[in-house]
Image 1 (spheres, helix red, strand yellow):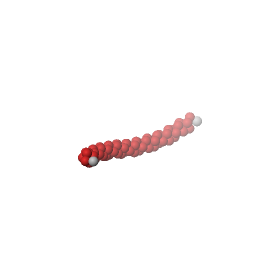
Image 2 (spheres, one colour):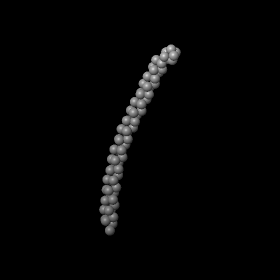
Image 3 (cartoon, one colour):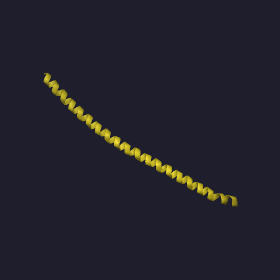
Image 4 (cartoon, helix red, strand yellow):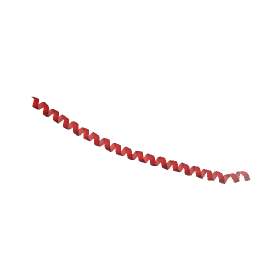
Length: 73
């Protein structure tokens, strides 16, 4: 019994160290995931702007095609 009790504080210290390491890893992963989320939001906004620009160009493109077609008639 005395031997087991003497071992217990060392195990607790080890568990606390493991917990600290695990907490640090979880915080690092959360930070990484938050950064990925920020990048995703930026990419979604960029994609939306690109789609709007494409749609605007396609709209103008069809207008130009209609004008050039009507001039040929």
